Length: 399
Image (cartoon, rainbow, N blue to C red; front, side, top):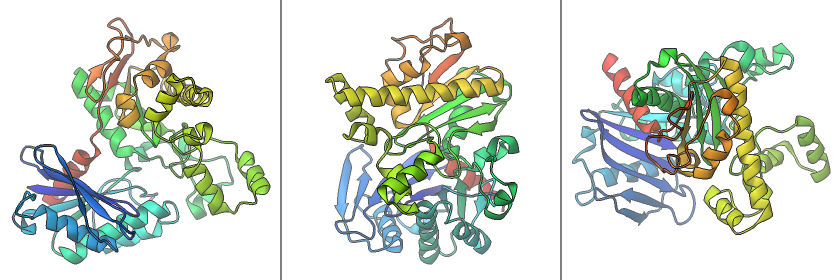
């Protein structure tokens, strides 16, 4: 069975085609700048080489159509006909209270995703456009949605509720949802497979640290808390997102800067985080380079960044009565050696003992704690797409 995985953003489409017989990747790439000038698709060739193809894509339907044409292209394609795609799986950021597990797409599901656009306006609208584009181009091909917050649906109410009048939760569904759930789900299980442990007996803290970042507490295989909230803005400091901030500081700044709510939301999501502190970049590689060259604000940003991750690790160890495994994943987590080491330093009282030499690893599965550490600290590269592909295959074969 061939499964196409799509991740449609507001102006982008990332795709990966799997042969699920052996879970091999047949094709992958991404369309950028959909609806904008100079749109293009980057395709990863079978030899690993990347090829950039310029193509006008005024909307997601044309974007999906062009991706399909590349998949069947005689020179760079991997299939002869779209009939060889058995199902399509979609990443969807916000499932709210409506979707607590992956589902096969039908009219009810599309309407549900649309009703949640207020909670994730940029993301959910893009996902919906992608679903409808596939439906228009391949109407008889089953589609599945895998929701970012579904893994976090096991949080108890005392963890996900905000301390505001309860009727606002009932009326407007204002609560902590959490995101990156597909990644947290994958790495929490994968690290147990890697270590030969039973996930149902483990206290795991998963650190998905990329340009967007979140930390999750996984107790005996289920999520009991996570750092992101109603939106992906909450929690640890991120590339351009502020993370946790006093709400009064937000209203104070809105008054001082004469900002409307959406302007402030954009400010906290796109102009804050390490970008806001350094004024340099949201890319941690550039921040680390600047810090090494003596830039004081870059050094400050790194201290703030690592400190906030450490606080969440400590908090979630308290929530679970200790911790057995700490997992690092995503772009920064898999590659930023100093961030991992600094965030785990000082946690010896929890049983964490790092191995500096073992920590000198990037982008591969590894144990980075010392052999005598009571807590095992690991790097596990995430693979959200294979989770989506597996869920898609399971649901369409169950029908």
